[in-house]
Image 1 (spheres, rainbow, N blue to C red):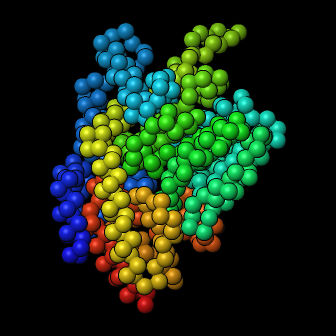
Image 2 (image 1 turned 90 degrees about the horizontal axis):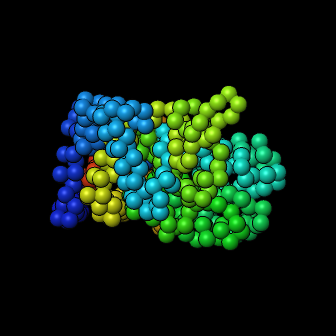
Image 3 (image 1 turned 180 degrees about the horizontal axis):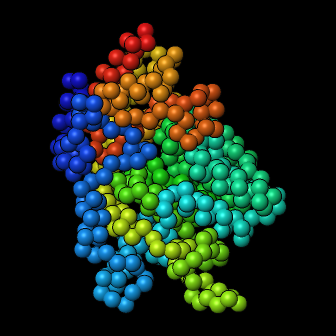
Length: 418
C-alpha cells in the first residue's frame, strides 16, 4: 500500500487522476456498500459528463434528422454530423474524410468489410489469414464469407508467451492470400501486435489488412497512414463514448470499389423500379437514420481524450499494469495468462482450483467489477487449454489504490477456497 500511495502521488503531479475521476459521475456511487472499482474498461468504458451532456444537449436543443430537411435544425445537425466525420478522420490520421464510415460498432464494421469487400474480391480457393488470438468478431464474419465464396481460412499460431508467431505467419503468406484480419491489441491478454510488420508482409503478397483497433484506440495515438493499413475499425463505447457507435476507416480507393452492405434510405443517388444508382462513399454504406446522438457523444469523448492526451493516458495505464504485475503474484496459485512483455491496459489471470466466475462474484461483493469468461476469444483459451480467465482492464480513471483493493479482495478469495 505504501508503494501504491507513493506512485499515486507521483502520478498526480503529471496526470490529474482526481480531476479525471470527478469527470465520471458513476464513481460517486457505492456498489454493495463499497466504492466502485471498475476494472472492465476493455468490455465497455465508463462515460464522462461531457459525453452525457453532449447527448442530452442534442436531444434537448438541437434534435433533427440529418441529410433530410431544408430547415434550420436539420441543417445544423447535418453540419455537426459531417464535421464529426472530419474530426474522426483527423483523429485516425486518415487522408480523406470520405474514408470514415459510421457504423453501430466494430462488429458491424468488420461485417461490412467481409460482406462487401469479400463479395467483390474473394474467389474460390483464395485465402484469409487470421491470428489465433482474434476476438470472435474478427473470426466469424470471415468464416461466413469464406464458406460463401469457397475461400479458406489460415490461422497464425501463438508463441508460448501469447504473441503471434511471425515466422509461422510468413510461411502462411502466399499469392493466394487476399485478406489478413488482425487485432492491434489482443482483447483477452492485452498483447500488442507487431502491426506494421504484419501489414508490410501482407502487402508484399498483395493482400489487404483489416485491423481490429478496439483495444488500441482508447490507449494510444493511431495513424492509419503511417501504419498503411487498408481498413481499421473501432467501437465508440470502449473509447468512453456511447454504445451503438462504431467507426470503419477504409482506404478510399478500396471503398470506392465495394458494393453496398445494407440498403435503404440515404445510400442512393436515384431510385426507380428499373434501377437504383448508389451514393458515393461513405454514404453508400450508411443506410437509414444513423445514431446521430451517439455520434455527437463520440465527438465529445474524442475531444476529451485528446485534451488529456493519449500519450499521458497510455503512460498512466502502463504504470498501473506494471504495478499490477508486481502485486498480483503475491496471491497463491495465481497465474498470468499471456506473458509477452509487449502488453498494455489488460491483464488476464487464473487461480488454480477456483472458477473465474466464483472469483468475479466474490470481487463484486467488494464493489470490484472484473470480467470472467472466455472474452469472446475461445480459440485463445483453447491455446492455453483453459475455459476462461479473470480479466482486469484499465481506463484513464483507474488508480494504484484500485489494484491494492483488488489484491486485498483476492486474498479474501484465497482464504475462502483454502
